[in-house]
Structure formats: structure tokens, C-alpha cells
Length: 239
Image 1 (cartoon, helix red, strand yellow):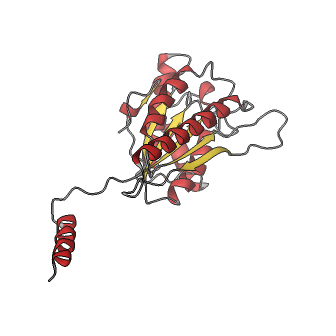
Image 2: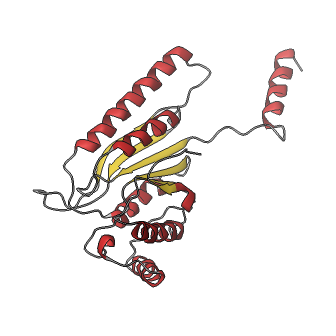
């Protein structure tokens, strides 16, 4: 065996040796934004965005989309995807300074897309359940990356079927909605997706508690990795 062959064999052995740290998994961030007329301001959205943007790295993908809802002067409720951007991972052949420059440019582009989303015509409804089903299709088609869903919304579903602000959300109501969405095949597929809710609010503390209990039950029923610790008015951190 030549010296070159020996070194190549040793390198492969080191790469496959038990205990060698695995290559970090790239992430797929889906940012779902509610800009309906019930949202008073976007301050918490922008605060959260700074954290989200800084997590975007080489090899990652990000989709920015708006929650479905009826928009004045538009014929139907459509799922409005604002951007779908990804950056190839850095390789040993890349110039480090050039890669960082490109990463900074991509983050700037995504920031502009986020601001564009906030300026889109605002809907008079908030169809979160339908929007989550649409988001689930993206995650189902991209299993190679770790899925992270960030929902920027007050979480007050306002659709033809359900109006949370006017409805008492009891355990029986939650059970009925879960059964109906399964029966009508409107349950989102979010298997293994990490979910964060930012901007949750309601008129009273009692209503806020009701709505939170619904979404914890619903998002868990969708197969996501979601708990009450990731539900609130602001984003604390992203794992």
C-alpha cells in the first residue's frame, strides 16, 4: 500500500469511526404570517424575525407565506406564497469570505420578502386550519431537512366553519373539530415538524387559555413536535 492509499484509508476510517459526530442536519423554515385585520401591529413579528433570520445558514431553506383569508377585491381565498429560498451548504472548495457575503445577501433578500408580506393586502378572515394543511404539503415534499414551522398569528381562527372569538372552546369542541378535520381530510401533515407560535393574543385571559389549549391539541394531533412552552406572544428561542 502506498502512502497516499494509506492516508485515504485512514481518512475514511476516521469518518466512519463509531462516535464520530454526525453532520448537522440542514433546516427548512416555514414562516406562516397572519396579517388579517385583527392584528393590531407587527412589532412582535419583527422581533421574532430577527431571531429567525439569524438561524438561516448554508444548506437551509425558507418559505414565507401568508395565512389564507378573504381579501377585499379578490375572487377567492388563495394561499399566498411570498418567497421560497434556499442556499447551498458551504463546501471545502468555497471561499469563506465570499460564502459569508452570499449568506448575508440571502438573509437580506429574505428580510425584504418578510417586509413585503407585511405590506400585502390584509384579509378579513384568518383561515389557519386550511393554511396549516397547505404548509404541511411543503414539509412532506422536503424530508431531507429538519422542519421548523413558525406561525406568526393571534391564533384566532376566523373561517366559515369556526370563529374562535365568538365560540366557547371547550374540551368537547376541541374533540369535535379534530374529528371533523380528520373526516374532511383537512388535518395538516406535520409529522416531526417543530412548531413555534408567536403573537398569540385574545380579548381576555380566559379566551387566550381556551385558544391555546385548542392549538396545543390540534398541532400535536397533526404529528408535530409542539408544546405549550412554544406558544406565546413572543419568540424566546429556536432550538
